[in-house]
Length: 436
Image (tube, helix red, strand yellow):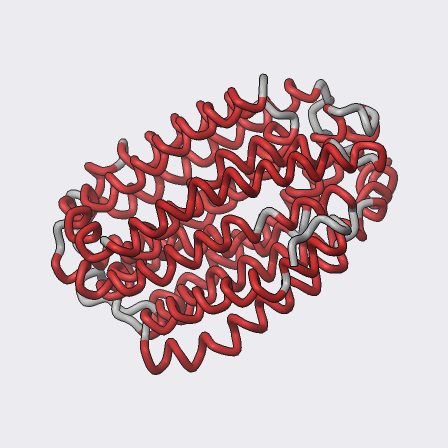
């Protein structure tokens, strides 16, 4: 499929999914209360934290899938990597899921604060969440394989169907407080179904054999391929983990500082602002497999040209949208949630996060040049610089200013990273191309 068609398919899907997410918030609040919505937001936060267990496996496999399509590696080599990483992904994910299940008690009793949901019900919901979180996280490995092979129209269509089943279909389960557990049970069943479909499609798309482990050949099938990918995976794991810690640390800190209803207002503003970043994803996900595929030295000029097109297009799309969202933040939140408290408490957060996400949408693209070349040292150092900027500010600002402080830390971190670090990446990856 052509680049233009991939971008169009991605945009249609992303628009539909984003619209569903925005429709779901007032719909959920109509059927239930802010505390329940806060618990659903906690579910999303734990799901995001599960990305720490990825240890660089998903982007490594997605990169190999793109290289397989461009015939830079053989099918046999890809099959070895797929088998090894699938096994490791399952093993690590199972441990993480068990940890969530065991930690449910302390989280329900000592961390979350709710005046409307009994702690024993919160405990049960957290325990029911754990397998669903594992299944949905594991799906990311196979989605990366399909995306790397540029089957983006299929991925877009599947994501749209899953989003409908995830956000809209289970809404009636929230109408009665006693059925809250069934909402999370439904999410776990849906996540398992999604995993089965994506795994089958990944195998069919690449032509690879289904991952299967022979214990007599454990070293050859698992240990050796992982060692071969260790350097790249370790770099991607480190930077991905830092990214997840940075983007979720504000939510973790605030979940302990705020009541569940206050946390719900913060989550609504943060969700609204994330639409800015989502606007860039259909474009970047269409370009990235091609940028990675142009990894040979002879293709360097074409790769840089494609990168320039990508950054220009993303900038032209996200910054006008971010400006509109920032200027009309309170009105947008009021219309969206129909809750004056949400608009009053969330509008400053929305301004800070929307502007920060607009900057992030462009700065995050530079990482793909480094992944394509396999030279990750500057990306690792940049991720450390980004995390240091954020964590120097976050504790003091959130303790003194609450959710507003988190928004200030988010914006200043992204602005400084753009001004200080992006020029260094461009000068290394694109000598003579960066404008001083």
